[in-house]
Amino acid sequence: MEFNFGLIAQSFPLLLAGAVVTIQITALSVGFGLLIGMFAGMGRISKLWFVRFISTVYVDFIRGTPLLVQIFLIYFALPMIVGTRINPFVAAITACSINSGAYIAEIFRAGIQSIDKGQMEAGRSLGMSWGQTMYYVILPQAFKRIIPPLGNEFIAMLKDSSLVSVIGFEELTRRGQLIIARTYGAFEIWMTVAVIYLVMTLTISRLVDYLERRYKIDDKH
Image 1 (cartoon, rainbow, N blue to C red):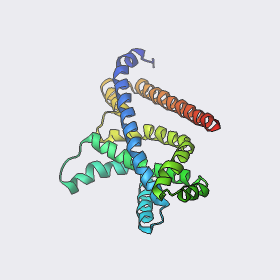
Image 2 (cartoon, rainbow, N blue to C red; image 1 turned 90 degrees about the vertical axis):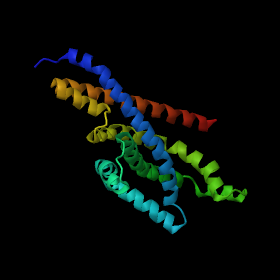
Image 3 (spheres, one colour; image 1 turned 60 degrees about the vertical axis):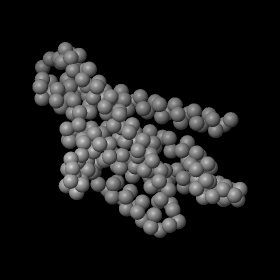
Image 4 (cartoon, rainbow, N blue to C red; image 1 turned 90 degrees about the horizontal axis):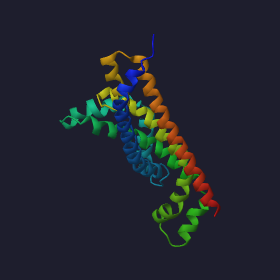
């Protein structure tokens, strides 16, 4: 069997366009997941029991069920309740954001709890409210500590976003499937898809390493 480089060259623009869509899905999902996770993470350590309960149920349910099932629930089951079909892009972003938010919630919770309790007491003693102390004192310090796990979550979501191909959304993996169905060049296309994913994940890893080093340097000044 000969390796068909011509097929790769011909298919690369389509796969690259799919990679751009994959990055868009990942960036939007992790972006919304940051908002969800920040509030859910603070809810996990709230003094109000019902806030802790709701946050814990959300985190445990999402982390305890596969993303694929969550995508099916959003795309196939939810329309039966709301009575209207959901756009595949909206369904993909919603499912991935909710999934990412649960993992980021635990990242935020661990980051917040890693900050010395004296920081909160110092902020309160200066007349700031709990929310102000959290926003101006605790979260900025916690954010520096959670950069590595946030980077890992971004990489994980980048790879897991391939699951949205099951609802027909044409990201990188789906583009590869469509090309293979037309050309039967499974080995060449899947190898190219794998290399594109590898390049994207390595790029993100290097960016996270740079941000981590930069914040460490800033802390020394």
